[in-house]
Length: 132
Image (cartoon, rainbow, N blue to C red; front, side, top):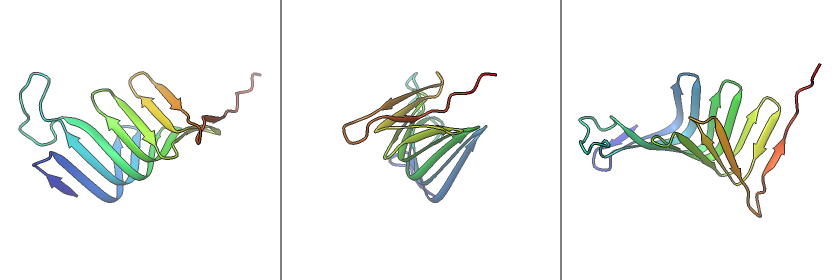
């Protein structure tokens, strides 16, 4: 771990594991960026009183219950409550999976946006549930 007061960052390298409630994040590198000021204009007394964003790189895995997202890079934006996955991003739940060029997870809304491109079109493998 390396903390830098000047640029208000904390860097974790190696096998990084983060737990919060039922959410688990693993990556090779994780960098936390502290917000410089609160919305009212006052500054913090501690470097990480308020997180601006967290950048994760290298074999990123985000797991919550039976949902798993993987990518080579992910950025968590605290204020917007979203995670943007890039570098072969894929989200799976059970046997279902979806992948594309970019996947945005909107945490507060429980939504995902999958974007494709010419080289990496959106691909989905879905197994609809059987009705009895």
